Image 1 (cartoon, one colour):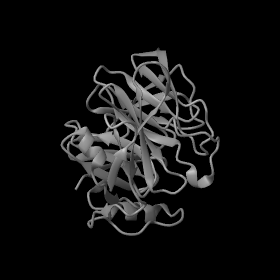
Image 2: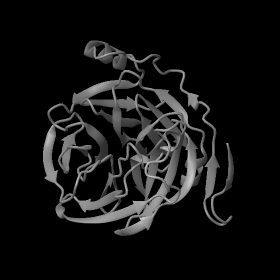
Image 3: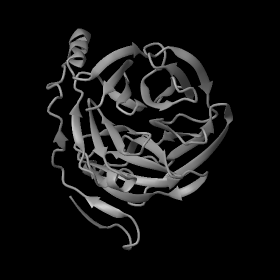
Image 4: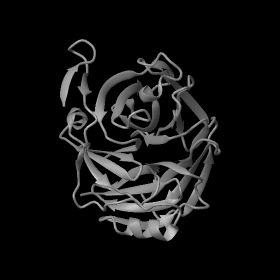
Length: 295
């Protein structure tokens, strides 16, 4: 990988990458369970080193599409995506429902959720499967005041066609996180499954053109992002896989070669959050809830 300036040299650098494979963790379980055989899927998930099922979100969260820590350190928030109610579900680490919070907003296609240190949550209503949307929004809200919602509206600086050609459809965003006064957006490359573009928008309400910061060589489709509390590890979740980026600073993380871990058989993995420095809580759209010990 090499870097070239995205804007003038004083600004952020753009990571130019090919569609080559990321380094793969050799302890990962091979193969993907086929068809709708639930027993085979459970057996395949059980064979993945470090992964174990801790509960179920079936009947609790419809089509869980993301996770974020709640104010109670033992609880988490999740939500359903396109077609579900604009609701945050507070759950325990084993999937038991604690509370439901109706948010005064529209769920066009909620796909991500993150929190800042002041307790504000950022709901990414920027699912964009066909790269056609012009109403991309991040809702900023506090769960203890769910009617007081503010909007961060944005557009992409490098999109001029709605939709673009199929190979150029890399404007779907299912992963975001808050970091240092900005919401960072990681795209899901539906066109070629090889690049996750990284954009930022301010964490304050308003209308913005997102800033393209870099491009990551991710040979897959990113569905969530999680940053460890010490800021030295970034995890990008994909469907049945995840990518680990390590570094001593945020800039280092965005330059790090991604290390791929195979989660084939776990289901359509959509949500990830750090439980502690070495453990992720992972949810699937089918209702699975897992803990995964990171290598």
